[in-house]
Structure formats: C-alpha cells, structure tokens
Amino acid sequence: MTFQCEMPDHFSGDEELLAVLRSARTIAVVGASPKPERDSHRVTNYLIEKGFDVYPVNPGQEVILGRTCYPNLAAVPVKLDIVDVFINPERVEPIVDEAIAVGAKAVWLQLCIIHNPAAQKARDAGLAVVMNRCLMVEHGRLKTTS
Image (tube, rainbow, N blue to C red):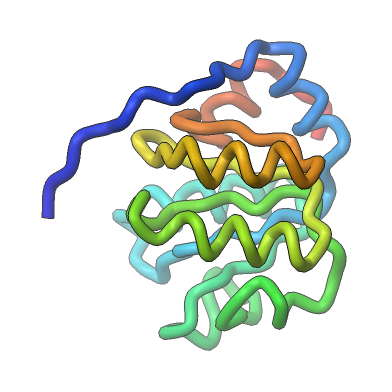
C-alpha cells in the first residue's frame, strides 16, 4: 500500500524536541517489529542501547529484542514518557486515544506518519506531539545525554 505524507500543521523545533527527549526514560514503540531490516526494529534497538526503558507494542508478537511485547498501551506496566508510533497514519487516532488514556507525556509519530486531528487531540489533552520525525535520528542529531 502506498500513501502520500500529509503536511503537519505543527513543526517541532529543536528546543521542543530536546524537552521531550531530555524528560524521557520510558518509551513504548507501537508497531515494533522483530525483523532486523525494519526501521521500527532498528529504532527500538537504538533506544535500548541508549539506556531507555523500551516497551515494544505489537499484538502479534510476544518478545522483540529480548523485551516482552505488549498488545496495547494499556497493557504496558509503567507510566510512559513517549509513545513512538510506527503504524499507518490511518491507524494513529486510536493510538493517540490510548496514549491520552494511559497518561503518556508525549506522542512521537515517525517519518511520514502524520495525523493532524489526532495530534491536536493529543495537544489538547496536554501531551507533547512530534510528527514526521525519526526519534533515533533526532536523538543522535541533538546529542542528548540519554
């Protein structure tokens, strides 16, 4: 399936990205994959290597990168700082609803994952929102201490 990227209605600047990254310890990766060739696998591995507490979320998997995989955000046993999303933009809104319900601090939509109404809903609920950015790339680029 192919889709075109929508334009985000808000572009996060470096200060906003740094604030999200510096305050994060726990990250759920929604759409994490056990396949090493997938971006979600590489990013999950990177975050683990950088010392984050990472919780893969994929209802079709039991373990990814040695970590228990959860079927949804509500099943993750800790409070989440970032919900990092690697799913089709059409499926984002329910994930944002879950992120709000579990009290996550931020929703991070990976490259070409943009859903402006869901992002606004998250912002209205007090969450930080990043869209169309790779968490791994931005973490490395900004040279955060995590």
